[in-house]
Length: 429
Ligand code: CMC
Image 1 (cartoon, rainbow, N blue to C red):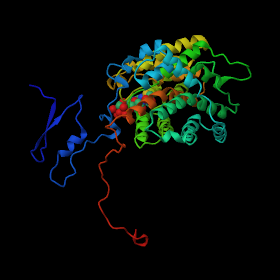
Image 2 (image 1 turned 90 degrees about the horizontal axis):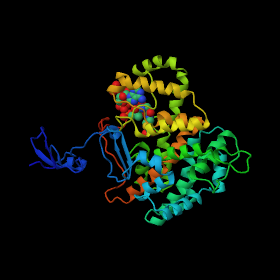
Image 3 (image 1 turned 30 degrees about the vertical axis):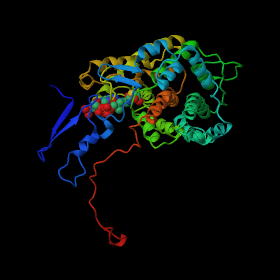
Image 4 (image 1 turned 45 degrees about the horizontal axis):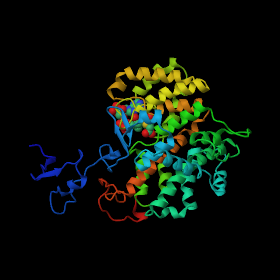
């Protein structure tokens, strides 16, 4: 009769242990009973980069990396990208269910009416160096929001938490657009409540002297879909940062700022920028062969390829590749697409990539669309951050309501020096 347990024999002692299995996992704390003697601390698992450790249970996002499946609250990403809107998806992620029409109206109204930022925030952004990277400005300004809303520390009150969630989803595009315009030396454009979430963001980025900014419907729709595709991705680096900082019961602005900081790195949200730099460096389809040789020699990485959890085509990349053509039809073709398509074709047939199961990820094509929309590279990770905000907040809410969660505190395997006596300066060689 099969049992949901794992039997472990400790060959050091001959002892046999039976560990319960639940949802295909054993509890790391169950290993601690495995000892060689009473003074032994007990067995731990060693898992650098958490490659095989579940840090939480979650009911938000499901990924099957081998099959290339991504679902938010059970809904396939392809259906949400085609039929939902970013704000509806944000509501879904945070509340767990799709809203009815009135609820969606109320949610949209609340977000729309929290888009303004305090004038001191504008001055704060003004104080950054004239060429500050918008992601650096975003990280700092989001953290600064905690000083504007000190009541956000009251994590026990669900209404207080709900208000900060609304504020963050609403204000991220405003801060992002101000950060962008600061670097361009342009005046700031206030939110326009007549426009959609994506339309207003485009307004705050691009409005010049016209009385009313009217976004291109194809670009507005594409941006909304891109936000949906980025809205959550379970326990990735930035979400783990959000949960890690949130686990100390810091306010959500401080936690979300840490998540933005984690996203900034070139291996995470910075990869879409790195893809464009790589395509520009390659320059022409003729140079691809030489570039691929360098990738295979370990000299450079093919940016926008590979993923910790997907061992198949990233389902978001499939949607974006299709979306790219809609955007190019509206605003003109990005010539770098030819290099990208050729790179993908070669990589998908090359044994180096096939044997390592390296496929295009979300960032391979997203930068090409952003660039075609007229967005400069330094704002790409900022766009990712806006899209990911509801996911970070949904994960933060889940963390706070999970009775099993405590302050995050991984263990280590200490391999440093043994106890030794302090050596005075004049006695050191
Ligand atoms: N180009 C060339 N080789 C690669 C690449 C790549 N993009 N990605 C992985 N490999 C190789 C790697 O060298 C290793 O080979 P070997 O076994 O011979 O040492 C093997 O594939 C496994 O790679 P890994 O580094 O162990 O994989 P990982 O799970 O630690 O890294 C990754 C995942 C996304 C950091 C990595 O694939 C990468 O650096 N990709 C390029 C950056 C990128 O596109 N990042 C965006 C990720 S998706 C959006 C997001 O989540 O932010």
